[in-house]
Length: 116
Image (cartoon, rainbow, N blue to C red; front, side):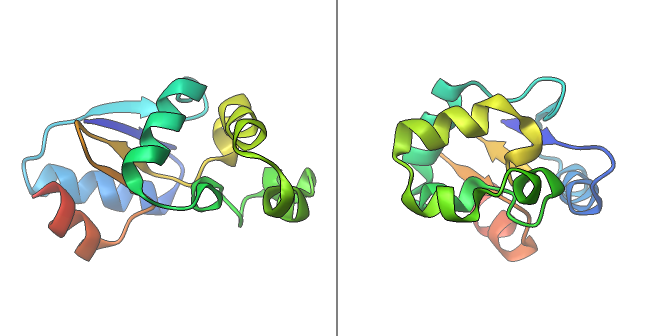
């Protein structure tokens, strides 16, 4: 599994701790230094079954700075994927991508159901 995270993010640290406690192996990737590619994001989006807007860090400073609230509501899939791939800080984190599984954000119950 690739585990995209931001080390200063408390939610990311909690998710990482949960993975460690449950002996789940992962490759930790700094989401800002090495954001997922557009192709990886598209695949994760398709596997997740979630709306693409769920991949955006809507509470992030960058999201607000760029005024993306209205844009995300009206833009097409390609444009949204380009935006996400352009800046790791726009992606809701942590983003965990496994063989056929994806989680966006961290909820212990979701992790238990999906990753165990």
